[in-house]
Image (cartoon, rainbow, N blue to C red; front, side):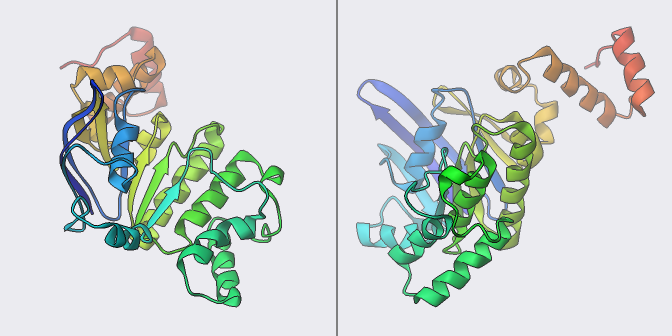
Length: 276
């Protein structure tokens, strides 16, 4: 669990975060969403210590990250896995060498043990026998899976993902979402995901924080978001008519008004609207 209380951050006169409080739950996919400039990236960087908040406190499983000295933070960071937006693989290293990099930095394993661990995580992301490939030989989805393998190679308690589906086609995005979701459950991690991808929100959004102009605007899950009355959230999530229609149909279905595809088509043709 990661809890942050009244986090504030500004750069010069630009106030980016204003008293943001929330709890990122263990064993769940915790999503931070919002438009560009909403503060979600700065918030994530504060949580991992890349930025120091000007105000507020951050706790990892009840232990104050804010008050930790550098040595204590170094120990905690070994329990944190990071999946970067562009995967951030080293082009000159093979897949195996990329994944082994954190083990070289932070573990005392011998080479044989490291090799076994690399093969374990490669198997977990369905990339067996990719050890000797270079990043230039991989598709976008494969690079993301290598990034995930590297992020979990040290058995982290916390996993941070920055736009994990950036640059991927919809089908590959669903594969990555499912992989992150399954790994979160399997290892009971606290997973924190920054995303613009509405498919991710609806598929794996178990605990969602919606940011607006540096403040917490709404929290809930992917089921509650369908019924939200928050206008700013609805404008962000259901921006197009297609997505608004999809929301209306989900609400009708949940209320038992829609029973099958034919019923759904008739409602759309007749222009029936969901009553309040």
